[in-house]
Length: 404
Image (cartoon, rainbow, N blue to C red; front, side, top):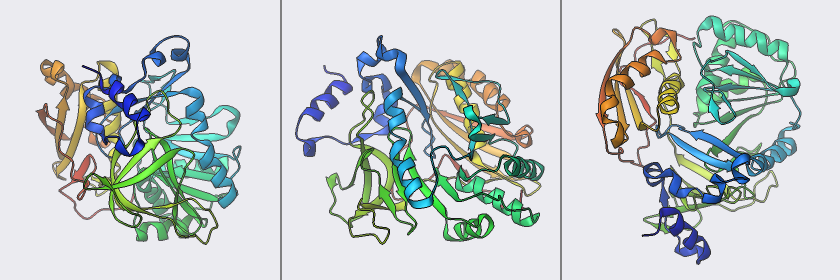
C-alpha cells in the first residue's frame, strides 16, 4: 500500500483541482509519511531546519524545511514591510519567544532575553510577565531602541496597558508594530495605536507554510503569493470569491514537507477587488480563527496561555512524541485549578505518572507552581469545529482582573 506521502506526490503530478484536502490530524498520525525521504539523507539532511508548530490549536507538529527555502519564505514579508512601513531588513526589532532552539534541538535552560547576532534583535521570554517584569522589559526596550516590534496580541495588550498605567515614555524610534499568532479585537487595536503611536500591522502565518498574508496600511490582509497558494473550500469544494469557507493552503516553497491543500483550521473568504494601497495581491478576510483566553490568578493578574507550551514541548522533546494534542481549561481561580486533557500516542500509555510530573515541573510561570491540575488522558484526537474554533486554553472561571 502506498504511503500518505506517495499519494500526495501522485496528486501533485495530477490536475491540481483533483487533489484531496489534508488535515493536521492526518499529519499528526504519521508525520514522517509527509516528508520526502531524500531530506533524511546526506547531503540534504545537513541543510534541514525543523520548526515546531503548536499555534492555538494545541496540536504539536514538527515541520521540516530546507534551510534555504525557510530563509526565502521570509523575503516577501520583508519586502512588504519595507514598502508599506519603511522597515528595512537590518532595522532593530524586539520580539517574544516561548522556546529557544539551537541546531534543531530545544534549549532546556530558558534565558530571559536573547540578543541576535549583529545586535539587530532582542527577544524576551514569555514567562513570569508580572507588573515588575513588564517594567523591566520596557526599560530594556528603551535602551535597545527598536524600530519595530513583533509580538502576539495578548503580549502587546499587557505591554501597552503597563506603559499607559505607569505613564512610561514612548520608544523613540518605533515605526511599526506587527501582531502575530492570534486575532485582535477592535478595542485592543485602538489601545495599541494610542500607546505605541505607530501603525499596527498583522502577519497571518503558520509554521507549515511561513507567511500567508500581511496587512497593508489599509488593514487588508494581502496574500503572499510567492509563499502560498491560498484557497477557500466550502462543503469540500472550492468556494467562489467572497464566499466564506475553510482556508486551505499549499506551500510554494517548502519542498521537504510540502503539505498541499492543507486545512489550517481557520475560516474566511478571499476577494480580488483593487485595494487603495495599490498592492495587486488578493485579500484574505478572516472570519473565524483560534485564540486563547488569559489565565486568571487569585490576585486578579492575567497570564498568557503560552506558559503551558514549554511544558508540553519539554515532554515531547525529552521523551518522544508523547502528546499529540492538548486542551486546558481553568476551572477555578481560588483555589487555582485546571483540567488538562492530553491525547497520547498509543505507545506511551504507561507514562501517565511521568507526564503529570514533568508537566507540573516545567511550567513557565512561577505563579502556577501551587495550582492544582486534574489530568484526563485520551487516545483519540479531539474533533475540530471550524464554526466554533477554540484555542488550547479556555478560562471558565473568569473573575474581575487587574492589569499586569
